[in-house]
Image 1 (cartoon, rainbow, N blue to C red):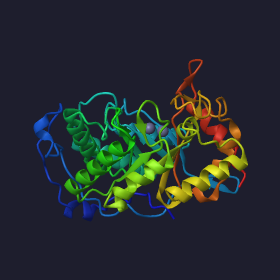
Image 2 (image 1 turned 45 degrees about the horizontal axis):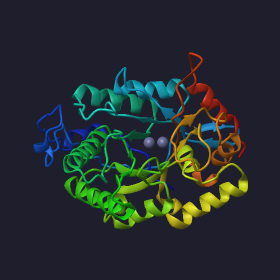
Image 3 (image 1 turned 30 degrees about the horizontal axis):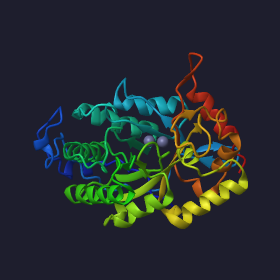
Length: 344
Ligand SMILES: [Zn+2]
Ligand SMILES: [Zn+2]
């Protein structure tokens, strides 16, 4: 059983848990590296628990959702998920393409809690900023990356989000081993600086664009081996990324071979989240371009295999496909395509 659900704090726990007020900080400053400029750190009482609200389709069940926008408020992303009949979702807790941090107000935190309680949707992941690169040798960028990840951990923990998805990083010409070492060292340091955080950090499989790491299962295993506190770590598997990285999943035989390799090298017990995306690029191209489900080089069969694999029935599955097609909201169409594939 994969532990993913966040149990909302009871009223009594809310009162007794210490909320540590900290100085707020908007833009990044180098001097903030050793501080966590956030409103509050709420010590989450428990992130464990069973999935409570699975989508039912015939006899099968699964946790299915999409990446939803926070443009109309963090809490609105959860209602968006509910409106799409989802029981899982992924969000950015800030603008993903800038270093500017988001300052959470108590009102935002309360509304997010309320939305989770009203909808019962607890399978939530936050995706980190695309700017973060824990493997970089550029000192300033590395300091900024570590600080941003630390703030993401605190922000997600404050919101009671159980998972954070991170692209491991790019070695920028310094080589795979050096990059892997820097990533693991950074994670060890960040974990030691945030001992009370319960949100689990998930390393995402990547397409391997440029010098990006995480495109082989061996690289992910190597990073995990070097992290001391593995109870705070896991993996998010992205179908478009592994396919572009060279792992075929289009036929039952290819799917079995790839998932067996994943299990043998990194272990399925470390898998906590799945991104279901088709790919605009072909097998092994190492280019990361997502396509609507069933309309790319991967095709529907692979998604049918994922949706009906009992080993993944408790793992949240999220689409990160293009939001629109011909001017229409296409999340619902992609989600329905996946739902129709369930025949367990
Ligand atoms: Zn990602
Ligand atoms: Zn992804």
